[in-house]
Amino acid sequence: MAVTETIIEIPVEYEGNIFGSCDANIRKIEKNLNVTMVARDGAIKLVGEPGRLKQAEEILMQLLELARRGNTITEQNVNYALSFALEGASADLVDIDSDIVSHTIQGKPIKPKTKGQKEYVELIRDRMIVFGIGPAGTGKTYLAMAMAIEAFRRDEVGKIILTRPAIEAGEKLGFLPGDLQSKVDPYLRPLYDALYQIMGAESYLRNVEKGLIEVAPLAYMRGRTLDNSFIILDEAQNTTPAQMKMFLTRIGFGSKVVVTGDLTQKDLPFDTKSGLEQALEVLDKVEDIGFSYMTSQDVVRHPLVQKIVKAYDQYDKRLERKKQVASAARREDRRSRGGRGRS
Image 1 (cartoon, helix red, strand yellow):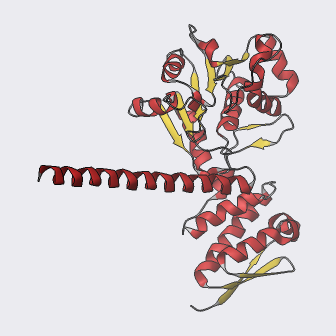
Image 2 (cartoon, rainbow, N blue to C red):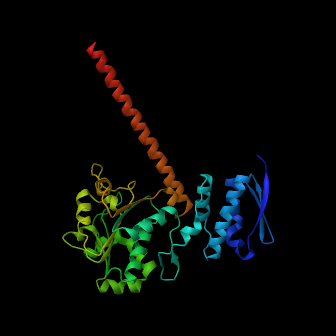
């Protein structure tokens, strides 16, 4: 394959942001696309195969536009763009970045960072009930929280209700001191953290006192009708079928619901079916219910988290294949033994 070169202009003021610490971003692009980049006087010369050069140029131009918009270019941005380039597609980072969901208390914009997250946000806007399914680190809860707070700020809803099942993550915590709220607070801490970051502690406490924001375990939902509310059920993989049905039938007029969960991290007893799994089967054809399935590609935490999620996905697939092979072998063995018995 012929080797060619091209030159693209990168304004000096954006070089540091795009190149990354110690030129880490540039080196990553070079390594993955097998191109060479040389920076000089506000321009980058790219050398490599024509197809790879085009991919590298597209990634650099997208990173440049992100930088112009005031974004800090992260390793996640580069990894995400590269993952699409290696599949022969475009990540379209600029289009994703244009969707501002809300702002933190410090004024920092909250935006989707992947196509999966953008589709998830759009579903929440368009549907009354949305199920957000995906591994850890895909922003399911945080984006839903940002959407809820923004709807609350715009008076689209009169109340925010955040709930999750109070179940230990694979360990028994035993007796917890304090009143009932103190006992359930540890299970709801991730929800508080997101609220404080987006809304601020003072605003949160003020609205809690007025009864406009409620953070409670799922058991508190029974017997209620929730009108004009934005309701988020987090960690839904840990609900039982009865709990999920109870929750979904609480929804009243003017409400919006987001149910988030990761089916690979269930903490239910071994022989208990997840209410989230059953809901996905039962409600699949119901109108005005949206389903957003995110993957390891949508993980926006540390890049190592994405690798961990991928490794577990691959392990689960290998385990499932082994089970299928073993099951097929047992069936064949039973058939062969049955044939010998008849003869």
